[in-house]
Image (cartoon, rainbow, N blue to C red):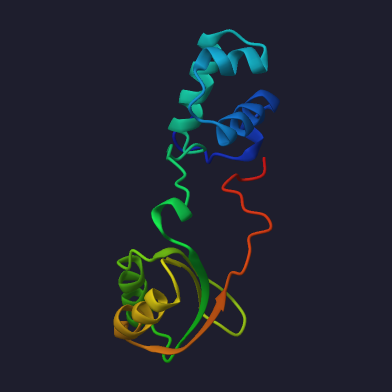
Length: 161
């Protein structure tokens, strides 16, 4: 692929998509195990995976940690509205939010709110402390609306391919 060519889903064939599905389920499989599942030898599978990594389709490999086992029993979705909307203020807000370890995801959204945060903490007492001491120190927050997860019905890290 030419370096100036923009990557597109059109660059993926059915085997690439199958490789992505397999790796999203279990990235610890060996190349030999993956090759058996896609009916290819190990060399082309290895080359395809390296190409997917090089092209940025596969960004990284990571371990998925059980939140309860590390005492992060409360998940909160917090909608944030900013008081002011300038580039400098927005950038400062993003930098401040990214620095908070309890915030595991942050989305800039449309609608009634400006941002949606996914926050993971030990319990309600820790969330209260987080809101007062951490989130409360972030400048320019006009309002914060919290929604507490009671139970998880479906959760996936996989991107549908």
